[in-house]
Image (cartoon, rainbow, N blue to C red; front, side):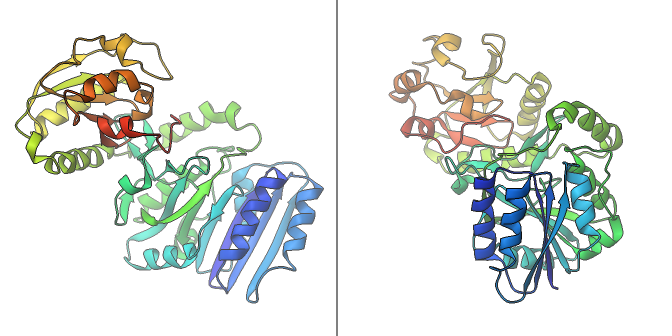
Amino acid sequence: MLYTIIVPVNQDYNILNLFTDSLLRTVSPSTQIIFINDGSGSAVFQHLEKLKQEVREGVTIEILQHDFPLGCAVSINSALRRAEGDYIFFLDSDTILQPDWQSMMRATLDSDITIGMIGGVLLYPQTGGVQHCGIAFADTIGRHLFLNASPEDIPKETFSVQLVVFAMFGMKREVYETIGTLDEKFFNGYEDFDYQMRARAAGYDTVINPNIRAYHWERSSGIHRNFNRKNNLARFWKKWGGEIEADVWPFVFSHLKEQLNNQPEHQHLPIVGIDLAEVRSDADTFWTKLEEAEIAPITEVRDYSNRFNSNGAIWLPQVLGKELIHSENRLLFLVDNFARLLENRYWIEMRHAHRAKDLIIDLYGNVITMDRIYDGCWPGTKVR
């Protein structure tokens, strides 16, 4: 077999049915598919058994059965030991796949000897916004790069990231033969990040090909995931904290530079920074790095981060009042994620009449003009 696809299943039947339909429509010949029914019950098992009769020639299906859920790492490891493919893929059972994803993953993996692992862009099926485009880090926090962005706003070419989620993941077989199986001490969380850090330490890079896209429902997280999250995260940082790179800033500043270059008529305007970020260490780092980069002529930075409650929407009339609506300066808003500013139609309408090219920067790598969120509905709003 050229390919092995591994799918842990702890899933609602209807969501699983959407996934398997997309899988059988897009799977390439010479593929071994291994499902692990991780305690999902008899209806799911019968559905998977039925798929054996429906696959195209050259595709095989194997089913591993767990009467009770044993978790993602145990499930994937049991399948890895049976994997025959030169290219090994992991998929969540709540994704909806698009044509040619396998061939594009393979071509990208083969494009450079240092590339060992690859992820695709995951989109919210409810809105079409970016759910996952790799993980980037600031000082201490890993964030889903370009979260909530329109797919048109992400990079057009393949780019390197430190980590991707296993919801849509591929690797060369040599990575598995070098690194081995997942660490089962990570119970339903961060086993994917740990695995990639082990592979990075061995010299393999992870990339995102932005042309590979799938929808991801996020409808099942597996047993005890939330309860074990802190333990898994602590284990990950204890093991890899010294190796993590602060890599979100190049994405932020390259996007900012591109936005400024696209608007030469506004380049002469002084810029006032409006700090609305709750993660203060990352906010302080941003303003310091922005000054060092000398990309934008910042005249002053005003910190309003203590004027609103945590989580949810930030309402500019409540935080800023009217004092900046009539400013002739260009405003640069820093916020944890730009989606928190979407509920400001009135304030932006008033501001829109004076200056349409204010900028919003967030800590997920997004840089957009204020008029973009004024013009209509946005494809993603979830902050994670």
